[in-house]
Image 1 (cartoon, rainbow over the protein chains, first blue to last red):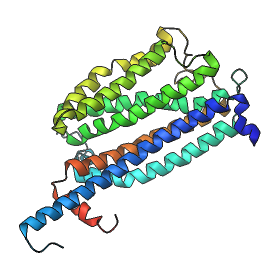
Image 2 (image 1 turned 120 degrees about the horizontal axis):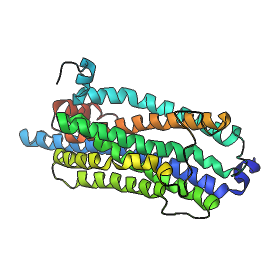
Image 3 (image 1 turned 90 degrees about the vertical axis):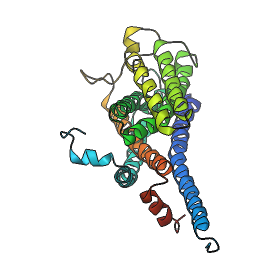
Image 4 (image 1 turned 30 degrees about the horizontal axis):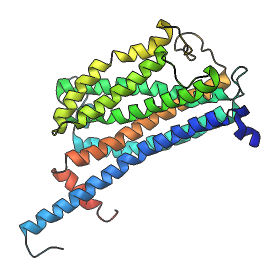
Length: 60
Length: 253
């Protein structure tokens, strides 16, 4: 097993490469999910505000 | 729209239909991408033997080369979408073009960093102004330029049109990246995998490489669709169908 992780002496180069690959793509994958949630949340609060303006005193 | 365009393609131009379609496809593409990547990693890191010249350092190929292919493939896809968006003014096409740019930039960045990490032990240098490396760096700057131009406009569609022009101008760089190893024979090696003629790689190393290529393609679909969905929620926020989604997801978030 330690032989596998040693990568014939190139462990630093090989594992850093794979780490960069997965970290960059993980950020790329999570960013749009967070963005979609944020926009939906903003839209909901916008809708709630306009509803409160339309019917004052009946806020949920 | 011309009537030779199939109806289903025409329908996909509608934001709510594309949103739903992307929502169905995305989890499948992502799952298949992760499975394919796991198989490719096992094949590339465990099953494939060490290279007789480069030892185990060559294993960087299994992410470097698929990422490099994606950096060019995504530029091509982005250019097609930008062209369609400019000519037919289809909003979905503009969004697909603009949301492709960050994914392309991510893969180009990975290509440059992993190439650097491969170059240090093999060439003895992190970086050199070799034709392939330089043109790939220009590709990264093009992606960043497209993203920057898109966001520098107050009006999103105006920004998308301006950035789409930049995408089409920048396409001259794609063949330069691809053929640079043949036109200027400097440091970067030539193509290992060839469409025409036998590939210069053993089958035990080729199949993990091609599996990783499939995984990155599937990942692009998943990431693109997630991005298009997020963008549609933002830009169609005034529409009834988005409001229905916002209210429907109230309980879940």
